[in-house]
Length: 169
Picture (cartoon, rainbow, N blue to C red):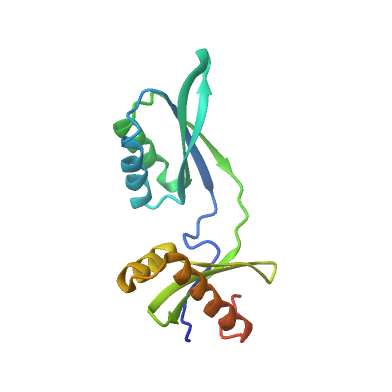
């Protein structure tokens, strides 16, 4: 087992002004949403999510929400108007509290997988194997995904217990 410290930051972008942009969309082919989400994530927004809603006249719709650094507001606005059927957006500044994240490379019998360790108030909140890494190892080694995830988690817990994790400031 070995661990490598890759990242230990609560706010990698340095600008603390965070916003949410929202659009209620009731007339867009649902196949378009993943494309729009990928495009938004590619420009560096923090997160994108979809929420099923009911609008006036009991119309089913989807609320598309984007969490972003305020410096990306114009780019996000341009993408949403160009790629969706929305005719209006809401945007507002939000406050957020973030755990400190540390990413480790953990070596297991089938290869390496990243593990995200988050902490708040000097206490570990969660240890989470990266899904895509575990999926790749499961496919490459023809073993169940849950077995890979459980093994990666066990190895990560041993590393954390033995204090082989670098300490975040």
